[in-house]
Length: 140
Image 1 (cartoon, one colour):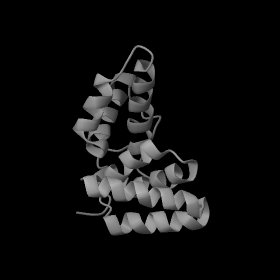
Image 2: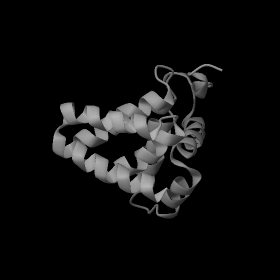
Image 3: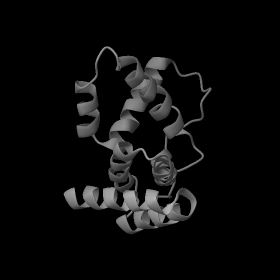
Image 4: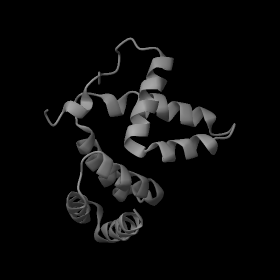
């Protein structure tokens, strides 16, 4: 087994898949990365206002981008965590800190990602990320 085995079945965009196939593949990846509990909660909380957005992120984010062959899921988690820290998206950060463990990162590796972000995203942003990570990992 190689470090890229978690990407089996991945393919770049432009592969001829129909939107329904993209949605189905995206929902599978979304459940694997975020958990059935999280996705089921998102579906239960979906409204007429948010339905198109949920469809969009399932097809595009999870059905296309997260399945591209260029990066393993653990690497994508590192990129996502860093971006969320940089932009102050705290609710999404908590969700992706949980997902990072499912994608093969350890708590020590997440700590290093947050520490690295202190240099490039700012010390206050990293301080908040450490607080959120402490809450997430103590709760789990």
